[in-house]
Length: 307
Image 1: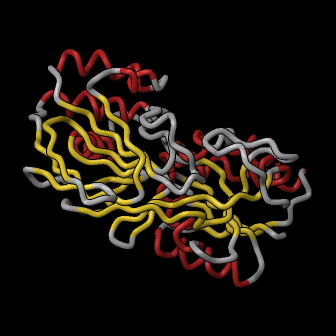
Image 2 (image 1 turned 30 degrees about the horizontal axis):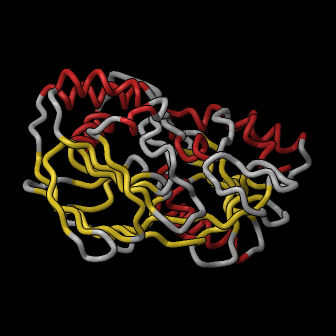
């Protein structure tokens, strides 16, 4: 199938735009027929994705996780096919699928990968591919998005350190599938469709993109110094063994808080609390690494669909 390369040239501080000539050369080398469509608007990207599907093309999102999530949402519950070329700062969706974060290297996945139906998360009708989170994460995300001082995925660590300086614990009320509600005082409530966020943090290492479930992660209150010491363990996924972290598998969850918070997903604001989050099982057909029955990371070891 022909590829419609939907690219945000300013993603990752211009990383996608700078890499575009090398990506085009690699696609030609691989013999992949394609054309390039530039976009600076997520709504425009959604429109281009729908046009690609109508033309029988694969919609390849080349940019950050926000762009990939927008294209995936436009293709939800249809016959469209999503391809992924990471070109943003964090590139966490690619990490969760073991797609190379180098966009030129990721071109090979478009040529040799297999198709798999993946889940999406949804907040008030808006979809996301990665992790929706609030609380401490709301502050850290806002700082990371606003800063011009730090480039690349280190911006998320910078945001976390800045957020920690003025953080006050909040009370969260969480209501899960069966209607059971509980309150917890702490840092963050996150709902994970995939395992990574923040430029490589493995917040939900057990999350699978095709299991029809979301991983609810709750970080309870601890002294700031202990929280700071725990942060590096999140990059290896070792934090889940600590008592301050709780992970529960859910299909739907409602999150409220004792003070206003914006929920962020795929690096962008997606809703204000209170918010209801649910999983959309097998919502989008995606090209993932591997064939011959080999599954990519972040996926269940079941059969893949032939390309």
